[in-house]
Length: 200
Image (tube, rainbow, N blue to C red):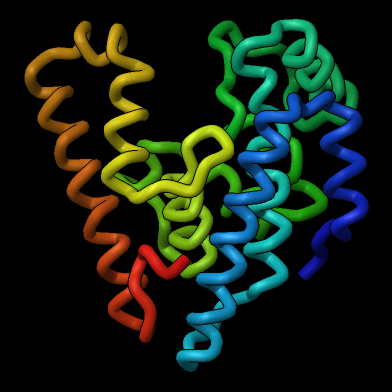
C-alpha cells in the first residue's frame, strides 16, 4: 500500500495553508488515533497503524476550503487539471469528500479512510478498523482539546445550533440515532481493549 511520508503530509499542510488551530486539532486526533490503533494491534487485532497515522495527519488538510473560497478554488482547479474531475460542481464539496477525491488516485486506501471521517459516515461506511478509528478519534477532539465523546457531541450540536433548528423532526431523530451509533462505536472499540476511553 502506498502512503505519503510524514514529511509529505506536513508539506501538504503548508501548501494548503492549514490554520494553526486546525494543525493542533490534527496533531491531537493523530495522537488519539495512533494510540488506539497500537492498542488494538497489541490486543491481536489487524490494524494498519501507518494508514491510521497518515489518514489522521491529512483528514482536515482541506478544512480551510469549507470557509475560504480562494483555497477551495485552488484545490478544485488542481483536480480539474489532473483530470480527477471534468468540471467544477455546482454544489460546494466539503473537506472530507474533497480529500477523498484528491488522494484517490495515489493513495486510494487512505482516501477512503479520510472521506469516512465526516459525521454522517457512520450511517453508511466505517467497514474497516482504520475507518472506525479515525472517525472516533476526530469525535474526541474539540478544536485543540481532548474531550469526552459526550462533551464533543454537545459542542458540535451547539456550534451548528442554527442548522439543527431548521431540521425537521425526522432529521432530528436521525441526528439522535447517529449520536447513539457513535457511542456504540466507542463501546465496540474499547470492548477489545484493557483501557477505558478516559485513558486515551
